[in-house]
Length: 415
Image (cartoon, rainbow, N blue to C red; front, top):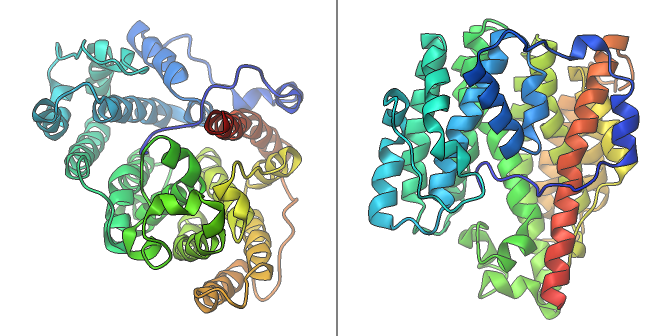
């Protein structure tokens, strides 16, 4: 599930058009002077990413190019991992060695059957632009690529058994991305060295997003034959993970999900600490929007039987408002406070994990308050508001894609 995103939406929603029509010119970046090979990389970015492309291109300065190349390198690695036509005896060495291909100008892989195969077929263009980056960026990307390849190989034929293994799996596919991005932010000097040095906080940023995806995507993953919920938890409630999709097991399914959501919420204090350290607006927007959407998603899923029946939707207006508001740390704290309170109000007394949920929510509540009071979400400069609207409009594509994909899977299973 590492870099997998929502399916392509065939038409834009009206609110997207409205928001884009009000974009401030400072939100756009001129790319006329970049090389043809870098233009090709941005073309691949827009072809392979439905949710990351817009926010990456909203980043400031040379950081934008570094993150673009970082994304494409990991997309290429993920495409190798996903390709079930590659035999394990071939795939495992490729995953282990993939970071070395960045320094082999002619290396490419032309036999992939995956939809994003262009990043492997034209890998020389991507690796060329990688080698054109400053050495401090190259070192970060190489290191993360190496570690992620090793982790992917480890979990190729291994199911997630314990909570410790769940954290480890999420670290390999998402925590390492957070760590790498943080190191790139610091290398660009747009953020302080501390941001890139604190791997624990960066890892939590990735784990919170990944666990949210895994929890929300239970039904979709079951229909595709994938399992990412840790056995240590679900085995307390069922004999098989697939049993949760049966109506007669819905109560146990919800109790299990609530326990996993409680586990994910333990990353929120680290998320707040991490975001409070950011000083560049483009980096803050890039990091904050996925986090507030994640807690909104968990609030919608908590104690909700619909997760096991179909799709859990966040209302369009609600999503746009959240994404537009998340432009400063006090607004983010207010958003997180709001959704954590929603979860708190839904905690069932009979739930085995209810006391743990109450404790972490109380902790989040205290961290979200500034000097014991809640600060309004709605104090922005016009430029920040315009940039937020751009990110909200383009990020909405991902949210819509998730809903459409889930609907399609449910309809397919009913047929």
